[in-house]
Image 1 (cartoon, rainbow, N blue to C red):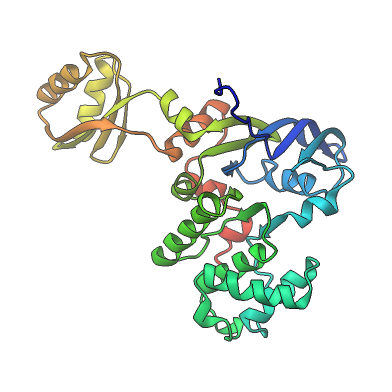
Image 2 (image 1 turned 90 degrees about the vertical axis):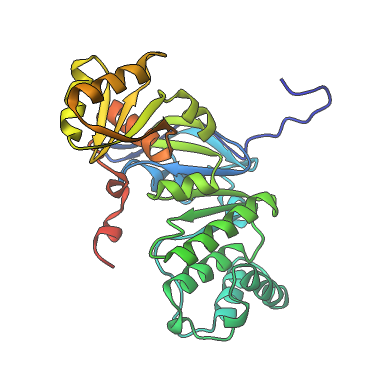
Length: 331
């Protein structure tokens, strides 16, 4: 419970019974959301309903039934007000290759209703913020993938939105550019006091930036909570690196009644009781294998996602299955 006098911050997005039909197809099914201020990862397989949800929240398409608000504005009647307070960084490239970066960002601001003077001033500020201060007067056609992504982010931030929606913000980036992008998004939340909704198939990226996740599956919300809470709910495991017969060791563990899963020479065993470690060592002796390393394994968001999808019966083998057709086309 909050302390006396402490303000309870309202959710930035609320929906109740939101449904969207495309003819006979049910794209969103009774979606009830309460998204808090801060950083939220939007996860789900391709076709789960993420894009439809965003379009409904932005007032770009009408809902079949249900209701919702974004920053207190009704999604059914105040779409223009909502969009004026949201910055959108799309996955696809919508930049004009013939423009200088400063002109592209200024133009984005003017499209959002800013006058030319304010848009120009803000363009200089946000281009410096995303690391492109020295590239402001270069043509976009000369930019690397990392610079293009940074320019898209600058366009999304130019009007100082309260909510930033990022669709695959690290797509195609090398490690250095990826790290800078994630740091910039984190700064936007923690120092800029803005909210970020981030959709990505790279679970490490989501876990680095986001505190909470919303997971969508077949048009329904299946998870809506903090990553910290989810991690606590996953069974503890012991991870061991074995040498000289990993498959034999796996078989022995299972025949001993332990739940084990193997990834090459790495085996993870569910921690059933205080005797689990002793049982593991006994199985190693009986299997004539060397245990090179043994430690408690801390699950990450990838593990949690796959576990949830497995329970839902989805054919998800890895986060690459979250990739949209554009990702898999080799572009």
